[in-house]
Image 1 (tube, helix red, strand yellow):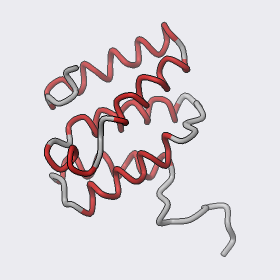
Image 2 (cartoon, rainbow, N blue to C red; image 1 turned 120 degrees about the vertical axis):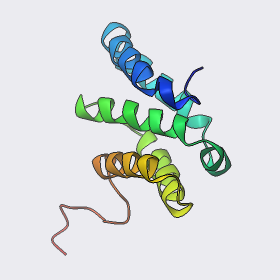
Image 3 (cartoon, helix red, strand yellow; image 1 turned 90 degrees about the horizontal axis):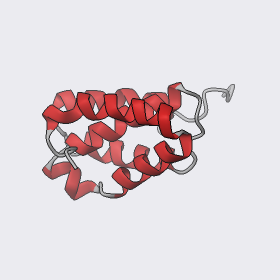
Image 4 (cartoon, rainbow, N blue to C red; image 1 turned 45 degrees about the horizontal axis):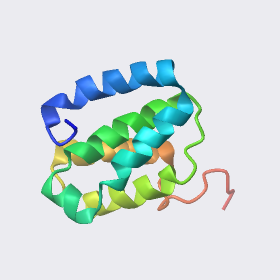
Length: 114
C-alpha cells in the first residue's frame, strides 16, 4: 500500500471516496478498519502518514453519516497518542481536526448540560 508515502495521501483519499461510492459503506468501513489496525503508537511515531490517511477516510465516512462503530474509539486513542508524542505539526493538526469531528473523549458529551 502507498499510505506510508505522504505524497500519496490525496490520491488515496480520492480513490477511497470513489470506491466508497462504488462498493458501499461496508467495504469502506472494512478498508478503514484494516488500515487503522496497522497503526499503533510506535508506527505513528515512526511515520504518521498512514494515520493521516486514516483520518481522511474517517472524515469522509463521518460526513456521509456512516456509523463508525468501534473505529471512533480506536482512532481517538491513536490521535491522542500522536498529539502527546508531538508528531509533526501538520500531521497533528489533521489528526486533531478529525478527532474533533469523530468526538474527542477529553471534551465529554457536548449534549451534557454540565
